[in-house]
Image (tube, rainbow, N blue to C red; front, side, top):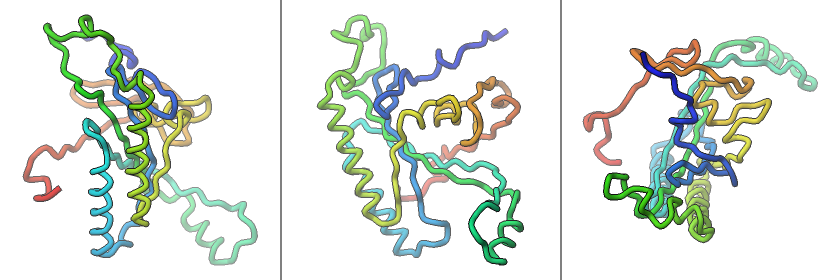
Length: 231
């Protein structure tokens, strides 16, 4: 019989503070919510410009940086706003027509993680017990932190200057939950909607991945044949 473990024991996130996530290994992560162009609105030249902007932005990030982009698609129902000011006949009819109709709601998040320089896997010869300090230098030296934030700011500025992408950095209350609203960590772990109350659900990992009464399906691009010839 497998012993149930608390999420805090396996979750790598140690603390959320200063609008950043700190891992137990000293990794520092900041998060952005991205507003992308509407689908089917970009020309071939626009796509190339966006691609060039991403390439230029990524090149300014410091060494040992991990870039993680997530696109969340959740089933939602359109909620009409009948309390708007005076509406025309067409506007009112449109609201009534689409009210409660299902659609896929899309949110895009970008996580930039700075791993400690010189970080190595622990083994019998190299462990935390024989290091001068178990805390990575970047979590103690404000200059290293400021350097990382400056590079992340340059990254965001390059993408925004392309004119196609908008970024908004997430703050502490959006990373971790508050009383009335779940943060992005809880939404990710417990599959919560943005307007749901924060709640803890059981996570079951066996023949299938199940969170509460929700079933998960995972699709992985792991073969070279599934990737483009040039990234």
